[in-house]
Image 1 (tube, rainbow, N blue to C red):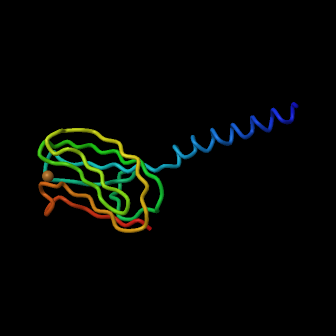
Image 2 (image 1 turned 30 degrees about the horizontal axis):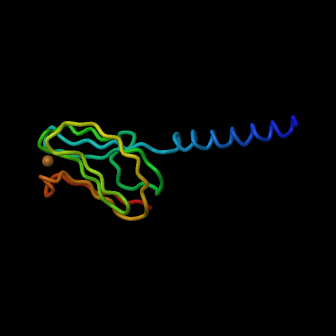
Image 3 (image 1 turned 120 degrees about the vertical axis):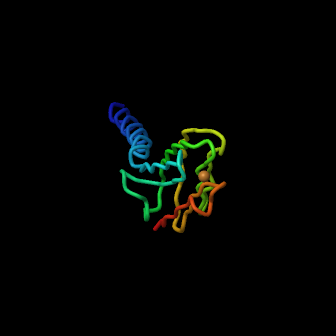
Length: 117
Ligand SMILES: [Cu+2]
């Protein structure tokens, strides 16, 4: 009985550990837009150009009331609202391919792209 109890405990710990682990292994990308005509996506302060496929938390700081942050790519289509200055957190799964982010009202000059490998 004691052994069974330990086995159950071990399973529970493994399950709890994996969900907690998923949280800590999700990488965080930071997207900012505005208040000027700038848009960017960084990881640890560096501009994102290439990332590995996987789950990510994307924190958006939309500092413009005439701008938004719109991310599109395989399986992802997320955006903030144009008139609102908002913060958003998106949990996304990035797959191999090319992702683009733009400010919709100014998509010709406020845009960026990165590759997922
Ligand atoms: Cu804009």
